[in-house]
Image (tube, rainbow, N blue to C red; front, top):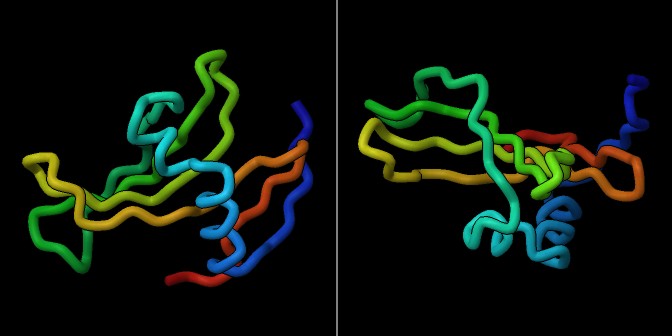
Length: 97
């Protein structure tokens, strides 16, 4: 499967897209299925793990990726946007937070 074209955007643009497309609401209410990947211990929060999270439509199509830090009891300390797929182009956050 060929790679999708990519374009770097600012954190502000990516956050605006997440808000406009109601991504956070769709993650919270289950319209997007979340799969946690790449868990490593967090450097900033003791007893917490940093995850890359892929979010997909009910048909399995991956549409957005986020970063999540949560503790061993499931409390989420931090969420931020990593990328979004729009019209066949992957827009990803160019700078780190």
